[in-house]
Length: 271
Image (cartoon, rainbow, N blue to C red):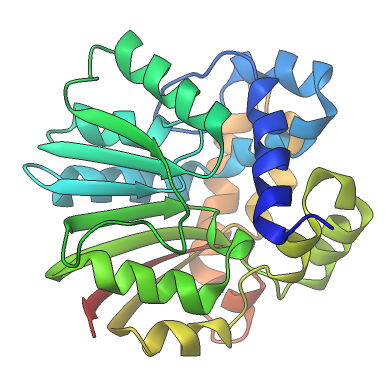
């Protein structure tokens, strides 16, 4: 039988190999990706990412404020979009790692295309055992990879390779909302079995607290999900702004905030 990591590698090799052009922008979704969504069923979920404007703005602004002059690790870097954004905003060095050979090739091509291959480099590595020395990075960023990993090993590794005064910014989906999770179960072919069963939930942060003394939380996207059907219309931007205002109020409430689609959290003071 194939082990978990081999399954993840093969899945993401296939996903990235057929993903088409990689667009570098301040969002992971763009109108140009509609053709990819239509032509490749593995990317069907991408339409929902049209509404993640607020969380992406928060993350990109955080990069601008925290990464200048810093050595940054893009942990499970995918096609390397965040690596390029970070390099464009003044990081001294960006290293991206991913288990997928295809992803790493895409990243290298993207860095070369943007004339940033002197700043951004990419390696095929196991995220649970990166091979980097202790205290190697000022900043670590990850987007949507933790639910593909053994969290105990991942948080331990992040803590180990982060400098004592460093920070880790994570953007993850949450697993509490029953409607969203039902959709995941109904579309299980779009994800690996491990991924489906390990979406981040509140108890997982007890694991994070074993390796980091400080966790800062930001919750995003509940009512904004209602806007995605209009993503290609002139009404979309205004509608999204209104839905964001509703989310900004409701996602401050203790129970409701954990029903959000996404969470951005910052880890610091590694143990």
